[in-house]
Length: 299
Image (cartoon, rainbow, N blue to C red):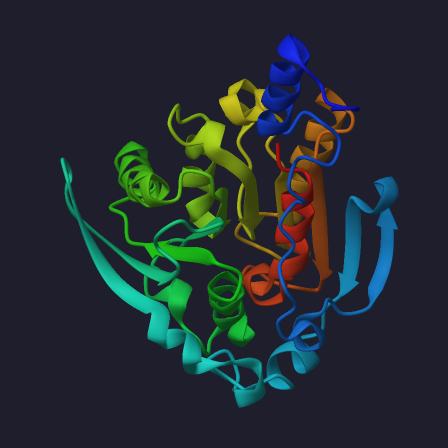
């Protein structure tokens, strides 16, 4: 038959196609479908540098809290939330060598395409990450984004922000990855939860699976430069309020610049919310934009 490839060449082509080595053979990267994008869009941009890797946004408390919530900081306006997602939200227990581990799972638990984990800060719990009405409805948005895109959202409890807590979180993540080994994995850390983010960056079971880290009003860690995630160039996204008195923005910005200095072109972004405070990034981060950026870089 004319045009037919025979013998070893045919076998090599089949192998290349199965491995996605031939142009066009690999699947397009996952792109999250829009969900209330207009409501959760960033406010006006004031400035940018580094080709848009660093951006400053015009945050205003009277508009972005009082104008968005029916009860400031406690209950967002109804248009920001869709509660149908509660049908796929479950309070789970996982038996482990460390005892029973508890977490919320929202979305597809088997063969998920994407897994996003939120780790709370000091005084928080797994319930914070699934509260539909606080933080301007932004947790409801990430739950819906995962559920509507064949993904899984996890919000776990953990004992502390040290080694034990990291082991607990890693156990929950690894349990979910067993049911979805090909999923893109993102870990978002609020405030003190960042301690666990940075430890997971060097965890031998988690770091190779990571598709991105999100530090939301969180902290820095120089040990990142010795981690597995650093060597693998795992994308890192920062969001910080300019008036954060818990973790001063100047220190976090310096860490962002250090990443860029040590590895020019390293995949990292920094979103600064002018006049924002410690909790502002959790309220204001555009989950879809942040995750789509990191999905586009997925190895």
